[in-house]
Image (cartoon, rainbow, N blue to C red; front, top):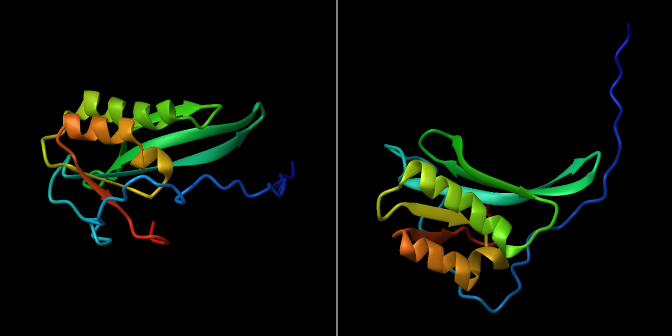
Length: 134
Protein backbone atom coordinates (compact mmCIF):
# COMPACT_ATOMS: atom_id res chain seq x y z
CA UNK A 1 0.00 0.00 0.00
CA UNK A 2 1.37 3.39 -0.96
CA UNK A 3 0.52 6.37 1.23
CA UNK A 4 0.52 9.85 -0.19
CA UNK A 5 -0.04 13.14 1.54
CA UNK A 6 -2.81 15.35 0.33
CA UNK A 7 -1.81 18.99 0.57
CA UNK A 8 -4.46 21.63 0.27
CA UNK A 9 -3.62 25.27 0.34
CA UNK A 10 -5.67 27.15 2.88
CA UNK A 11 -6.34 30.83 2.81
CA UNK A 12 -4.36 32.69 5.49
CA UNK A 13 -6.66 33.73 8.31
CA UNK A 14 -5.54 36.80 10.25
CA UNK A 15 -6.47 36.56 13.93
CA UNK A 16 -4.55 39.41 15.57
CA UNK A 17 -6.04 42.88 15.71
CA UNK A 18 -3.54 45.14 17.47
CA UNK A 19 -5.03 48.34 16.06
CA UNK A 20 -7.27 49.31 18.99
CA UNK A 21 -7.64 51.97 21.69
CA UNK A 22 -6.98 49.69 24.69
CA UNK A 23 -3.89 50.12 26.88
CA UNK A 24 -0.80 48.12 25.92
CA UNK A 25 1.10 46.52 28.82
CA UNK A 26 4.92 46.71 28.90
CA UNK A 27 7.02 43.81 27.62
CA UNK A 28 8.19 42.42 30.98
CA UNK A 29 9.79 39.30 29.52
CA UNK A 30 11.99 40.92 26.88
CA UNK A 31 12.00 37.49 25.13
CA UNK A 32 13.33 35.70 28.24
CA UNK A 33 11.34 32.47 28.03
CA UNK A 34 13.05 30.75 30.97
CA UNK A 35 11.56 30.01 34.38
CA UNK A 36 13.23 28.42 37.41
CA UNK A 37 9.96 26.97 38.73
CA UNK A 38 6.31 26.38 37.84
CA UNK A 39 3.72 29.16 37.63
CA UNK A 40 6.20 32.02 37.30
CA UNK A 41 5.57 32.82 33.63
CA UNK A 42 2.75 31.88 31.32
CA UNK A 43 2.16 32.75 27.68
CA UNK A 44 -0.61 32.07 25.27
CA UNK A 45 -2.25 32.77 21.98
CA UNK A 46 -5.27 32.00 19.84
CA UNK A 47 -4.97 30.14 16.56
CA UNK A 48 -7.42 28.79 14.01
CA UNK A 49 -7.55 25.14 13.11
CA UNK A 50 -9.32 23.79 10.05
CA UNK A 51 -11.51 20.76 10.72
CA UNK A 52 -13.99 18.84 8.61
CA UNK A 53 -16.70 20.93 10.25
CA UNK A 54 -15.00 24.24 9.43
CA UNK A 55 -12.72 26.64 11.28
CA UNK A 56 -12.39 26.43 15.06
CA UNK A 57 -10.44 28.76 17.30
CA UNK A 58 -8.12 27.38 19.94
CA UNK A 59 -6.91 29.52 22.86
CA UNK A 60 -3.97 28.03 24.77
CA UNK A 61 -1.98 29.02 27.89
CA UNK A 62 1.48 27.44 28.25
CA UNK A 63 3.67 27.36 31.36
CA UNK A 64 7.28 28.40 30.62
CA UNK A 65 8.79 26.04 33.20
CA UNK A 66 7.04 22.83 32.11
CA UNK A 67 6.48 23.89 28.47
CA UNK A 68 3.07 22.27 28.81
CA UNK A 69 -0.44 23.49 28.18
CA UNK A 70 -1.92 24.64 31.49
CA UNK A 71 -5.23 25.93 30.12
CA UNK A 72 -7.15 25.86 26.86
CA UNK A 73 -10.50 26.65 25.28
CA UNK A 74 -11.98 25.97 21.86
CA UNK A 75 -14.88 27.58 20.00
CA UNK A 76 -16.27 27.97 16.50
CA UNK A 77 -16.30 31.76 17.02
CA UNK A 78 -13.54 34.07 18.20
CA UNK A 79 -15.27 36.06 20.91
CA UNK A 80 -14.02 37.53 24.20
CA UNK A 81 -15.26 34.55 26.25
CA UNK A 82 -12.93 32.20 24.33
CA UNK A 83 -9.86 34.05 25.58
CA UNK A 84 -11.24 34.28 29.14
CA UNK A 85 -11.93 30.54 29.41
CA UNK A 86 -8.31 29.47 28.76
CA UNK A 87 -6.71 31.43 31.64
CA UNK A 88 -9.69 30.64 33.88
CA UNK A 89 -9.01 26.92 33.37
CA UNK A 90 -5.28 27.41 34.02
CA UNK A 91 -5.95 29.43 37.19
CA UNK A 92 -8.42 26.84 38.52
CA UNK A 93 -6.04 23.94 37.91
CA UNK A 94 -2.63 25.48 38.67
CA UNK A 95 -3.50 28.13 41.31
CA UNK A 96 -0.56 30.43 40.44
CA UNK A 97 0.91 32.73 43.09
CA UNK A 98 0.50 36.49 42.91
CA UNK A 99 3.12 37.95 40.60
CA UNK A 100 2.93 35.24 37.93
CA UNK A 101 3.62 36.93 34.58
CA UNK A 102 1.12 36.34 31.78
CA UNK A 103 2.60 37.33 28.41
CA UNK A 104 0.44 37.66 25.31
CA UNK A 105 0.43 39.56 22.05
CA UNK A 106 -1.34 42.89 21.61
CA UNK A 107 -4.62 41.41 20.36
CA UNK A 108 -7.60 43.49 21.42
CA UNK A 109 -9.07 40.54 23.35
CA UNK A 110 -6.04 40.51 25.68
CA UNK A 111 -6.15 44.28 26.22
CA UNK A 112 -9.88 44.35 26.90
CA UNK A 113 -11.25 45.31 30.31
CA UNK A 114 -12.65 41.85 31.17
CA UNK A 115 -9.31 40.16 30.55
CA UNK A 116 -7.39 42.75 32.56
CA UNK A 117 -9.94 42.48 35.40
CA UNK A 118 -9.48 38.68 35.57
CA UNK A 119 -5.70 39.04 35.70
CA UNK A 120 -5.78 41.77 38.38
CA UNK A 121 -8.18 39.69 40.48
CA UNK A 122 -5.63 36.84 40.55
CA UNK A 123 -2.55 39.03 41.01
CA UNK A 124 -0.92 38.55 37.61
CA UNK A 125 1.72 40.84 36.18
CA UNK A 126 0.64 41.55 32.62
CA UNK A 127 3.21 41.55 29.83
CA UNK A 128 2.67 42.09 26.12
CA UNK A 129 5.32 41.19 23.60
CA UNK A 130 6.60 43.95 21.38
CA UNK A 131 4.99 44.38 17.99
CA UNK A 132 6.32 41.70 15.65
CA UNK A 133 7.77 39.55 18.49
CA UNK A 134 6.02 36.34 19.31
